[in-house]
Image 1 (spheres, rainbow, N blue to C red):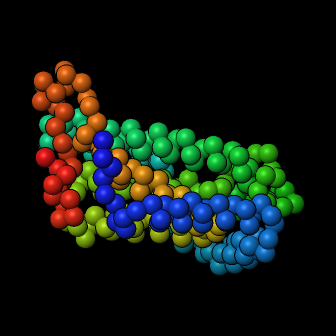
Image 2: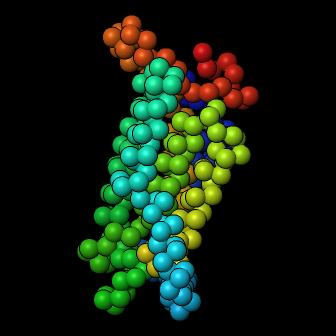
Image 3: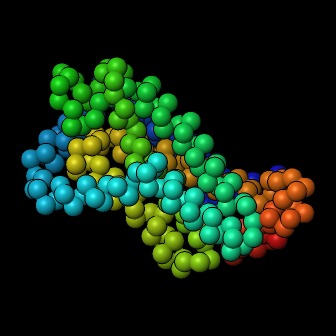
Length: 240
């Protein structure tokens, strides 16, 4: 099966994203001055967070809850798009996104073992590989926002305007980066690393030729194995 095109094309951007994530991780693990940036940002936002902003942004932060908000929303959207286009393929994208986030975010959090920015009971809560109970790095909310809103944007392409699709893809992850940092749920570098990881995972999902995956004779005969992607000017010949 031929991979679907992404923009910008090629694997160079993917390599840069992975390298950027690895660089942030190494710099934090090596206890470089980058840690002082995290501490300075955390101390600043803690000193400049009025109650009204705290309350408002806690609600905004719910936009990045994977299991409670984004996954169910993606399943519901896939259900309606499946019925509208008479194909089960929208669910393939949802399952792919779930598996990809499950095997990356959780293991990375456990491996890096970093406490949240709001945690003060340890001497050095900002360190990686230190707490034996930390689950802060990278920010799951930010990764989820990039991956799952990318899934929703893909499912709704052709239904929503292109401007709104782009807003879904890129605005909400930036909102999550701000809220998780401002509320001290995460260190700044947790969110920056999550941006890089999320964009990498998003590009992987975009590359998968979901319309070309065999679904078996029964679904094909029943007429539920057709394509669901909406053609774009960059790939009119790839959608049939």
